[in-house]
View 1 (cartoon, rainbow, N blue to C red):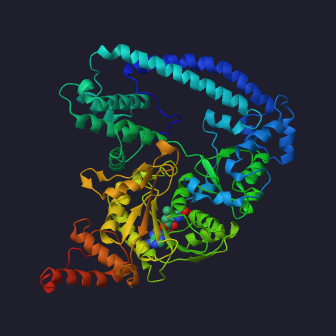
View 2: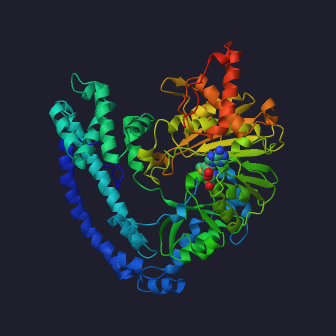
View 3: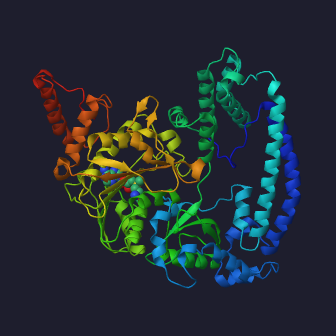
Length: 620
Ligand SMILES: C[S@@+](CC[C@H](N)C(=O)[O-])C[C@H]1O[C@@H](n2cnc3c(N)ncnc32)[C@H](O)[C@@H]1O
């Protein structure tokens, strides 16, 4: 079924509570509709057209916007503009009018970001629902009324929550509710489509039971029965494959899992990063506000990020965008670069760089000094990388397209390396719903297999004696443990010459040191996890390493194919992968694989010739 929930969910109601809540909601709607009239009056007075008409209107010029505002005498535009400006008066920026670009580079005080891959190609706003069309109508004049309206809604929600709490207290002595469907009901459910509201209510009921099993579970029913039903409902309601639903569910407590799944139904806010090579955030914000863009700083953790609520112009095509004053970039994508802490005049490698959101940020933090090697294995993707580098005026970058496992054979001795690894994308389901059904068990073997090889290459490409750096940052936009903690743990085992260090990021949850019976290196608590439901950013993972000594591998001339063959062999030995594993230019691989299998057998004292055909030969 797969549903895009409009709102985050509140306290879980019982079936009775649900009915009562419905009635209350009706009441609330009535009350709010009265207030809506007032709000809508403001909307219509500022714009006599409907939201749909607004969309069809030609782009407004600054003059148009000014003319438009004359209809709303209550709002003092100058005052409003001052107020907006003050939002960007970073206290650290010194006195008014001073050019203090340095402050923009204070990475200590900035938090996150993610891949801006194609973000600008997505429609900014949809008129699918009423809320969004209200947002589309939002402008400088009616914002105050809208915000008052939201406050009132919040108040009502709070009252309602209080009422629910009281009711829950009263209901404490009620008999345990039969939440799980009977066998007959199950049979009926498999035949026809289910009522989504019922499914949702049941999920909430089951979560309640799972979180207070002793008190609330029906006699004779096991925890597994409840969990199984809940997972089926999650698949039904949100549209996940059973495999992925369970994988993601296992990361959280049941109620947090629900929050996670709900948050994936909502797109994250549109965010931009100021390119400090060309402008200051305050100036950019003012220019965009003048163009009719409603925005505000993302949070205290970044001095370069802006969140866009609504715009009368396409933010991916303003003169400032074309001039490279900003880039559309997800907030979580700032994080790995902030953790990397690039310094001026360093040599830095961005191993998987396209389309360049992080490369261009690195370049900006280095103030166009030193050198950034921006690599991506996919030649086609280097086009967008080059385009962004040019648009943003980065002059210290070199673009190349190697399989990053070729490093350090290609070139090594970097001060810092960023590996923003290719991943399953389980952190960006809000952006790409297809992940819900497309990811299979095999992906969570193959992708980490590649990530591990890439991370070893990243480590081997860093100069342990760098006077300023010796740093490696590993990041993914996945929340899966296999692609994050397990990869980091593997690298710590294979390269004892690196250690994990604090990321320096102000936000983020600690990485797992153990997960479902697996124990990882205890320092993995220094890695950071990000979820859409906790920080309203894409799901992300960041780990920061410091190389403390060189190793024999640093001078290794092994390229991608040798590494793949070795890793494949190693993984087969450990039983992690089998003969039907990924196809990696099989013909060319064959000789390497056979050679390494033979070597391996010899090492074990087995005569390789006694094996006619290896079971590990890759499938065609
Ligand atoms: C998460 S994206 C990188 C996003 C980029 N860092 C940014 O901020 O714009 C991962 C990239 O890894 C590249 N990639 C996949 N396998 C690779 C490999 N073996 N070596 C280098 N790059 C690879 C993909 O082409 C993709 O562009």
